[in-house]
Length: 239
Image (cartoon, rainbow, N blue to C red; front, side, top):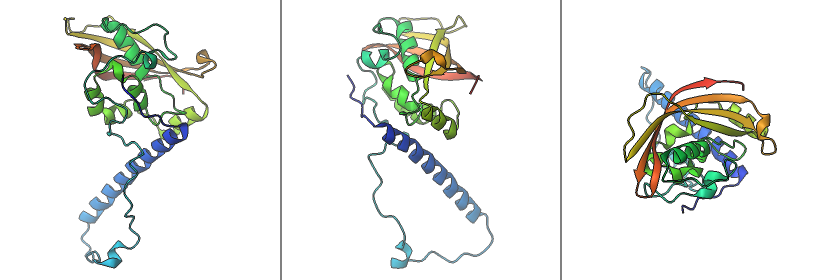
């Protein structure tokens, strides 16, 4: 069973802000470099020696803050034993049957899209909780994409967190055309209806989003595991 790093709500919220600020800083730096390269004005060469280092921050980066793309919380191997507790909390008391690809697919997606903005630093935290039902190498390679899988502003995420909203997904396997099932692969088009609620009253929220995606489940040595997931379309509801 994979051991995950536990972060406090304050740490997770600070991580989200750290990631956002870092991304904005990188964008601003790139823009300034491009402006400098396109200018015809002469510029004095940078100073050297002690004066050049004045005001620079030479402290090492904070390695305790997870960065997007670091793979924090994921296993070092492709497949691991199912973490039944992580895959049943708040969703379904029954264990996932890893001999049934549909069971793994539904619960793996439910957990991956059960967002907790009050304590999660990003959408990817939910994928980490669901990682035992997924190919961990795939999650690691796709972390940057899955962190922003559904476009939203930091203001929305923070607002949901301030109101202690939790996202409760309903996953449906559709009858749309898909590759033929084999002994090693199972593919389906799925819909994920996202509704917000609270811990005390999960039915009190509103439908905010429907995700339509294509998923493939692979029969690994550990049992069936989600191998890939691609979003085809999103339909925005109430905010």
